[in-house]
Length: 180
Length: 291
Image (tube, rainbow over the protein chains, first blue to last red):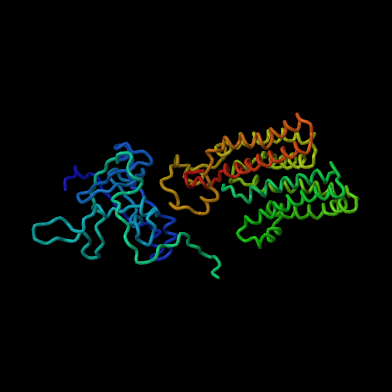
């Protein structure tokens, strides 16, 4: 892949807090990590003239996303990254369409193809670790540009809500209150 | 700080009630019979009603009595104990005046002193907090006590004394705001000291500790409505202190004028107390890059 087209590395990892509460404490997790910005290095921040509150368009060979950016100086100059597993499609997890995860949260998934490029052997290989199946998040190459001002106040792509098989989540989750 | 209506009502009304008790207790006027009943009912009603309003602020009002045991370390506890002792000490003087035409000046004076101490302890609940630099200042008890004395004096019909007290209250309010605006910046608490990273250099927050709302942000980092602060200060200063002072000094005394001055003062003090809470910046906000 020509480096000039996609000069940056994009990384993503699950927040540590999620490992401490696998499948439970989701109200708590939502409070800690409800939105995620794209962290960009100081070098990229200066080069593109980003300011606090700006949005960027991040492009890979496979797709494009429009996301909020934040400056992080303790980062390799050619790297951008964000938390994985925060962004949700509207309606997923029985969340309301206004949930922060469904609006200001996003995933890098839209930039990553399921399959590796064709090799001419007639087979398409999965874009994941052959042993563990872990999707290949650490070889994603991208380019970035400042999003034109006046865009919507939510990350893109923005899909229609999916139907939830369970009733909508309660607006308030209480703990320790009287049950009777 | 979140300006809870129960706390605003409590501090303003009970301050007024205890202020009236100071004047009644020290015998600035000694109303007897039915007139005495009205005055004492007003004093007890305002002071006691305010305390009741304060217990509604608690998550578990039925546990309010437990606060009384912590008077060695807590100003809130002292306030509770002092208010109950004030009520008890004042009761024979009040009952004697109303039912027997026999005031008890010694108990009255003792009760008056206790009432003033109660207002002081209310103010100290806020003034003792190093974590809220705007409150941690002598102007906080000054405003609370002058408001109680001036408002109480007005209720007690002490026009000559209330006028100058209102003028002093205006000065105290102005000082409280003027100095309060500079307290946080002048204090030792910064993002550098909060994170302990100051020895490396200037700290810029990459991300808050959590992205959602929580109790701390709701109660301690309340920033809603501060944009109205300048206008509210003018209203509070004018209605709460300046206009009542001018009315009392310039115009002949009368019940109608007194009632107007009381209502103005009450409205102004409610605005001032709303500002007192809404403008208070807790240092915990440093962790969120907000105050």
